[in-house]
Length: 116
Image 1 (cartoon, rainbow, N blue to C red):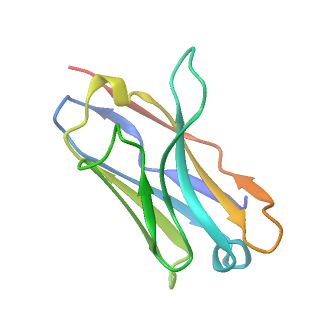
Image 2: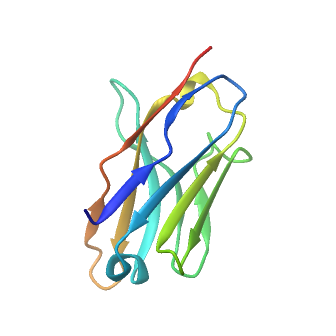
């Protein structure tokens, strides 16, 4: 497995979660990384992205509530989500885009359910 996402679960509205995406060293070291999500009946959408250099980008829907980060020593990307809302319910996927040729890798997804 080249990308392994984890950390999803059931959380109440207003709660927090931290998602993790572990990658192989070869992929992580030469890839910009991102989190996407897909809710039932909806298209997959970008949640947040981070370049190799650490530049971040967020969807408007998570700005101020989400923080993406990467630990280059551990080949792992994180997404800290706070003040979760029911509309954050989705399967969250990690994505790696190799900077050499834009080839993409996808993780298997982790379910996040926000419900009381």
